[in-house]
Length: 261
Image 1 (tube, one colour):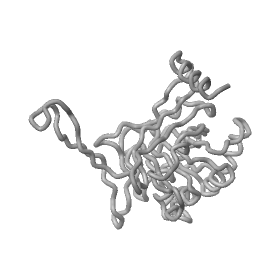
Image 2 (cartoon, rainbow, N blue to C red):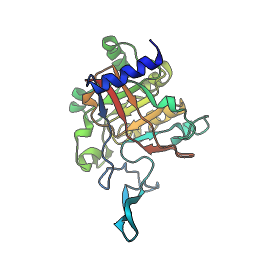
Image 3 (cartoon, rainbow, N blue to C red):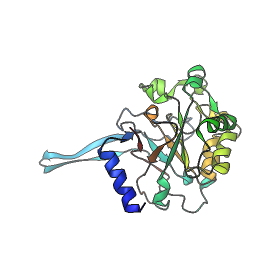
């Protein structure tokens, strides 16, 4: 089948409703939760919007705004340069990553039962291999998406889940991150939580292992996803294209999935 025929078939299948487009992105606004850091570190600002003009004397025929936010706000992309382990890699910034690497098949690992029992659940290498026993081996160049239903925590307080000993949220065991990066050669991982490491990962050895391992291997991260419950375990394709910011370490983005209807 020719490439033209394949692309034409894709368009036709989308038009006839056999392929659906699932938006995996949370709305981006002043109420969007932002990860908190200890006060010794510089914080990331939340999203703010200020009007330039809106059909008035500042611009009678047009409406536009100025926006201010940190690169890693809302549903966002983590580039390798975001972490110290990836700072010396080639093609590690948003403007140098080849565009083809933003698109890949989705492998959705559902751990909602586990996270309902433990907010600090960590996905292990063994659990991934058990998932593969049912759904097949994770292919190279895949997005591995961790479904926790964490995005259904609609208030910022419940979403960030900060307690006296810090934030609590699920994530990846360091051995699992290493397995996915080096033995499965994934594009990266995606999560429904505010960051790709577990809430308590600052206390792990090493701290924030998913960031360190993934970005050190030149892999990516997607955070604050939603609607993973609308995707099958396999069979969907994810398009996660960040802004082409020169020397950028990350960017808010609109993550879309093409999935069987």
